[in-house]
Amino acid sequence: MVNKEGAERALLQQHLRGRRLTGQRRLLLGLIQGAQAHIDADDLYRLAREYEPRISLSTVYRTLRLFKDLGLVDEHHFQEDHHHYEARAPHEHMHLHCLNCGRIIEFESDLISRLKEEIGRRYNFKVVGTEVHLTGVCPSCRAGGQ
Amino acid sequence: MVNKEGAERALLQQHLRGRRLTGQRRLLLGLIQGAQAHIDADDLYRLAREYEPRISLSTVYRTLRLFKDLGLVDEHHFQEDHHHYEARAPHEHMHLHCLNCGRIIEFESDLISRLKEEIGRRYNFKVVGTEVHLTGVCPSCRAGGQ
DNA sequence: CTAAGTGCAAAGTATTTGCAATTGG
DNA sequence: CCAATTGCAAATACTTTGCACTTAG
Picture 1 (spheres, each protein chain N blue to C red):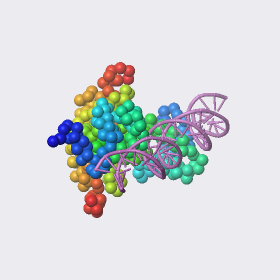
Picture 2: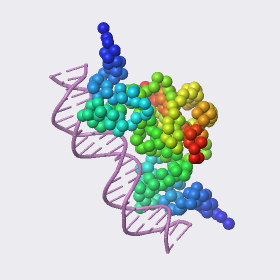
Picture 3: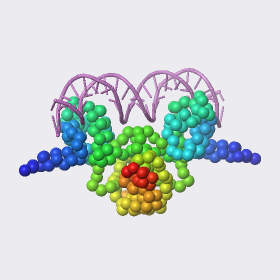
Picture 4: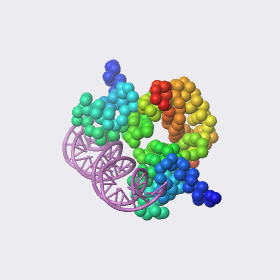
């Protein structure tokens, strides 16, 4: 009989598709999934060290790349020159980004699946992924200065 | 009376909003506008050196940033870890990217303006920019291997 | 003329890699 | 066991910066 932790482990095992289930991988995935917002490699590294002080930044990068390739996390390229990551969400969503205060809102819209379908048909592509990123000015920034 | 080159110059002058119109800036903008595809800083640098061998990579980066800030070029973050640039197009378009062969198709769809409008209204944002990037497998790659 | 722009070299970030030591299956 | 994974340090890739010289306006 399988307890809760065992079940979690088995699920992750499956996600890893034959790769080894190490403490570092388990920790990092947990941290990404628990993260309130999009996290970057460096923040993840700092956070992970609180639990496993000997973890290295290389491992963080290697693991992020692995998770990305396995489809466990999504990598985002916001305005910055480094990447942000988030656990792959149960359903596809997009980002709305305030250029003034930096706030990022996640939203969904069925327009995106329609877009995928329309464009896939038009160009005979099999569309598998989307990255939709709207920028603008949020209500409080509109109200405040300018 | 104004000849063709003079008119071009005046137009660029206006775009630069008071910044100086240098040979490097004129060259770089011309190259970006003439580029068949999205170009990155390094390719632009190599290309520019054919015309102005003493141009420096710093100038390329500085100029790209200036053009981006002025809205003359758009900066894209594709899968790679560096940026690609293109002259700002007359109308907003999106990208469809083959994960297998790397080909990038530009397309338009009115779904995107509807998305801007819908989301702007929903969150009371003033939406100013969009980056829409679909990934998938193109017809020839679907036909070929897998 | 003179402030803005440039080239060069050096520095700064973000990310990857080689390798010996460790460890999951 | 032993190949996959890790930590560490060093390397690489991309981008920015300080400064003396040049140049557009």
